[in-house]
Length: 228
Image (tube, rainbow, N blue to C red):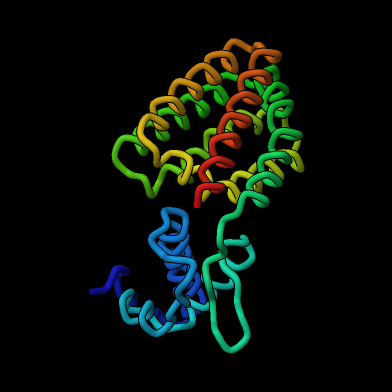
């Protein structure tokens, strides 16, 4: 069964159609990897995927190249693509970098936020809540959007890009962290307290709450990954 709609190429628009398909394939593959639906032990079968999605291998290869750039998959000579295994060392590195950059950036963001910025942060929080209730596949992207919305108002483009990149790298770990019972409720309460402090323009409290939030997630992940 095809997951993607078949698209007829208009004259002179072949490149556009391929890019559109590649973007959709990228989103589907990314969601499957982040939610653990594609195991790390088995190769990604391009012929099987192309047949399932009802597409040629051209947009699939483009999507796989993007996934490799994001660090989600690796290519092995004569073996093809594999999902990169998660590790405690990688989690330590990603979350350590987040701790250095993100709390202070969010504190600066709350002081610079305009009303539209605040509205965007509220909307991002609500979207994350809705996804957590019934769509695990969207939680990672919604979590990234919420955290980035707290940083963006400061207008520091490089910092915002770094935070977003680290959020992307941490998405699989965030989903793994939320799997044990009760974790989603705790994350909701921590995000709500963080948003309230941010909206109140309390930079010190914003920085403190976000630091505790990231540190708590990393502590849980270390225990989870050590038990594997």
